[in-house]
Image 1 (cartoon, one colour):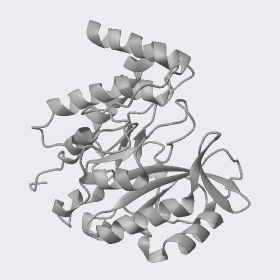
Image 2 (image 1 turned 180 degrees about the vertical axis):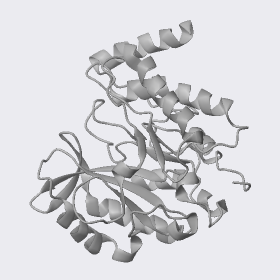
Image 3 (image 1 turned 135 degrees about the vertical axis):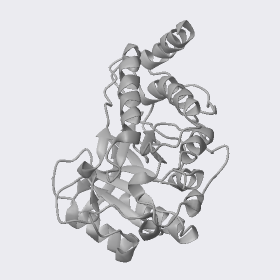
Image 4 (image 1 turned 90 degrees about the vertical axis):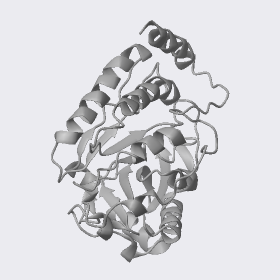
Length: 298
């Protein structure tokens, strides 16, 4: 405990003054440009009849937030690298201006637009048709409340309509293969599943690094609830967080090792944990999450 507190205090110094640091590649945390190893087709071994709500999978928070300094950056891997490393849940934030959908994290433009995200997912699923990708889509840094038409336009222009899973119902793995499942976090007719239909823990506000233990308790409680929760419902747990005195890197440096230790202690248990959504995940922790697939008796 003293060691953990010391690490938190040291990271707090950099979190308060917003300093960057050299790249780190640990089993639980990676802010280098390239994953340690890749796992692009891990869903191939999941039985076709298994509901997607029974699948445990890794995800990234603010998937495209690679730019803007320590208070905006949540990832360092490209979208293609994340998908090939095994990430299957994407958190995409779009700014809507006159029909255009640029990618933002708050005020920070992420040097990409929604069409490039769609193209990247389409190419990945063409190369690895055994997989599926779940994508939360949310409006960011604009308040039109009306992005449906632009999203549909971008899908037609940069992907294709049949790439989508067109139902609110949770698909089986067989139905989901090769599909992009939009988790719709905006108003309008159904494009896919509704984001609000998931059981979600996203306590993202971490004012200072002295609040990391509270953040971890939220993560821990939701992961503990997932195995006995509604098996027809997808569980989604965000381990990410940030605040004025705790940027995303600093929080991830504290929370990711606790998450890694938690998962390592449960590796022999046959449990569904749902989607675990992270900032700066490493290939080994992604692999550990992938390995939590339910055994065939389920």
